[in-house]
Amino acid sequence: MPDLTLEQFTFWQRTLRRAGVPEGALRSDYTAALRLTTGRYPAMYPLARSGCPSALQPHVVAVAAFGIHADCLVDVPVNECDPGPFHAWAVQVRQGLLTGRSEQPFLRAFLRTVSACSVSHADVHAYLAGQAGRLGLSGYATEQDHYDNIDHSNMPFARVLATSCGIPTHPRNESVVRLAVDAIQRWDDLADLADDLRRGLLTIPETELLRFHATRDDLESGRDTPAVRALLTHTCGKARAVLHAAYNALDDADPLLQLSLRPSLMICFQAMGGLERAGAALLRPSPLWHFRPTATHLLDGTLRTLHHRLSLAGPTTAL
Image (cartoon, rainbow, N blue to C red; front, side, top):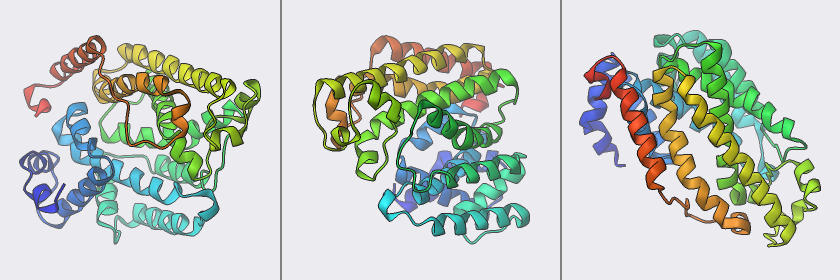
């Protein structure tokens, strides 16, 4: 999306006003955060618009830009991993939490969001520590390593994002968020399996490879064998089961959390079928998302999302 379009984007300028972002440099900082997020994930802003009230959308974008930049510093080929840039940036973030200042426009927006939304500094520090633990990671030994990544990296970020969305913090919401984060991460690991393998990371645990008599070399070489197909079918099955559990658990969450998570889970559901059908083709890089909408599920998710938009505080929250 061109810079000029972003600067003149009526919806975006309206959300900045509703978020109380003053005119001038700070609005430019939030626009820089939007450029970063839409440059990496073009669907990010439409999702933000559908998943939270307009006054909170700039904060969601700022948090997303913060997370995307951290991922870019961490998600590098294992044999090229230099922890220096990430640790140097983490120092900037920690200093920024103390001073509120930074030389990076998107980081200034994030720091302003941290202050405006009372985001816990402890969660930001925990997220940075979790991301540092991913540097140079080449794979998981057991399923517990997957859960450790969820607890140490994904969940601190999810708490920062939830706070920026104004979602109440209590055990029921925390439980739903963890299920959703687990589901989305499993889907993402499958969608990125080929690319991750090319940069030296295997997110399927070694214990699962042993169980199905497959090897890492089989996966890295893209071998289409019965063992590999059985392993991938099993891995897809686990991802779908967690997606189902997360989607069903949403009914017990607060309306704003349902509104925030349902679009993302709905997209994962729609793309899951394509990943399952791909079989051993998952081991080969592809620009396709294998997105084939299922009318029944798409309608159900859309109606539920609209219901929760209308249940929130008044018609202006949907704009």
